[in-house]
Amino acid sequence: MICFISAALTTDGFIGKDSAHAAFWTSKEDKKRFIEITKRAGVVVMGLNTYRTLGKPLKDRLNIVYSPEKLTGADAVAGVETTTKAPSDLLADLAGRGFTEVAICGGSQIYTMFMESGVVNKLYITVEPIVFGSGIKLFNKSLDFRLTLEKSVTTESGSLLLEYKVNK
Ligand SMILES: NC(=O)c1ccc[n+]([C@@H]2O[C@H](COP(=O)([O-])OP(=O)(O)OC[C@H]3O[C@@H](n4cnc5c(N)ncnc54)[C@H](OP(=O)(O)O)[C@@H]3O)[C@@H](O)[C@H]2O)c1
Image (cartoon, rainbow, N blue to C red; front, side, top):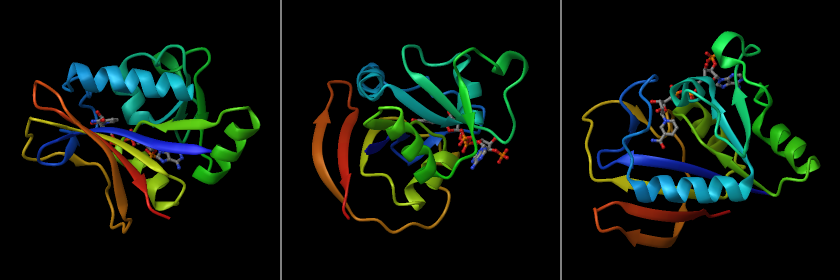
């Protein structure tokens, strides 16, 4: 199972200004790659805060939302699943359903939980030419992983599209 993180960072290392700040500030190249890699995976995993920033589920992909409770009201959309499973249990469940790739789509709580559990083998990171000064970081606790940079593309507008492998 390939489990990858997809995230856009400001140049000063933030993924958002606060938990409710939607990640619509990213470049068109980042959005294009995000759509491409998440559709290839077919399943996107995110936390409830991130899900709420989207306004609606990501279409043509199974949306799985980490939430302490079942979705209600405007959050409850047909086809969107909730989970509280440990990352390895969720991946085993998805493998059993025929998925071979899973996209971990944030936010910080979910990126951290998956990275810490050791199941992430790839990171698609975009560094955007923008600063927030303060905000939410990619990971919210101490981690120690070595990465190998596999691909790096600089776009005309100055975004860096990076692909890393997590060294095992
Ligand atoms: N730049 C990017 O690429 C990018 C991508 C995605 C998101 N973001 C940004 O990230 C920010 C949101 O991140 P965030 O860290 O605040 O929130 P988040 O990770 O999106 O979601 C946190 C929510 O998930 C729930 N949750 C976490 N672990 C759980 C578990 N094991 N079981 C059940 N529920 C669980 C939490 O429940 P509890 O309330 O019980 O703790 C909380 O409600 C926003 O600014 C968003 O725009 C940026």
